[in-house]
Image (cartoon, rainbow, N blue to C red; front, side):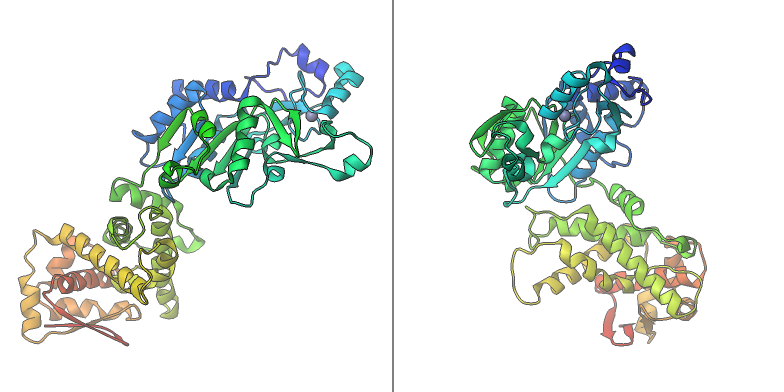
Length: 466
Ligand SMILES: [Zn+2]
């Protein structure tokens, strides 16, 4: 619908023939228009094209309330924020109304009085989609006052009688009237708050301190929950559960390519990007670390391993490469296998362990990194004969690598170790020392993890030998 923000009275709004639609209808219309125009409905959402998004679109077309079920870091909040793009660019409200009252049919006491008093001159204002969205992380201490409202003792002292809405200080949900309200981790909401929310959604009235107040809000309430918490008996009151028309499961990226795409899209970027070169195999190793963590029995899979783990690990690995470059006064930053131990700082807060044994976290993370390197190494080299390299070590070659080792020291290894340049050529044809260093480390560590080379981890670096 064409929006007309220059209109500023009820009379002018009526004259313009503007129709106010319920929020669900507005979302539905805009979704239909986007689908017809072949526009991307949820831009920036990767890997849900054939799974989550069709279900979500069905729910929106049905006007159903939605609960998204998924472990942490599955883009649930992002999907819900994407619904904001389905709201009209502007809608009219009664100027100054705390609950975005529809000028044709205000529901709050103040606006109703004003409408009687001013008639066609009732002032009208226009609000944008971002004014019509709010979200709240559910916690056990959220109260009815936070979510729905509270009786304002000052207003009572002024002589307004209870039950009169003028005495209500509105909470988050009424303030999102005619918009989208998202409640994250719904099962963490106390039972009586869930009941309050249900009454508001279903009965369109609220009970505040025993007083029943009619409040016919128009709010699209969307929720998220961890699947296990949600299905756990007793965590969600039954009427509220029944209320959801659509229960949609999200998931983690189904391929390394999708995980990498998200890592590249979401990582923090700085103006010195052009000096950064990231080999594809290093991206794959990092995505694989997360993938291995999602398979590990030692990691609590009920809470899951967020895509944010991949993103933060990626940032940390790149920063370690950048730090080396700055320290050594070099030009190009290129991450290497020896940078990987540093990701423990970003990974450790993002996985929950099943056991609490002393030191088990460090060992597990080391293990995840090793498994990831060997997986990706095998992907590149399962068809390549690397015997020549091993034989070269047999006759006494050694190699020193490390995250602080200058890149210019690496290309010499290509001359001293037979077959190494052939192996590196599988990874890259870029002969800059930084990229050579990264490729050489990947080959040597892969051989070590395949038990074909020994590796001694020393304070100066890793020494590979037979
Ligand atoms: Zn109002």
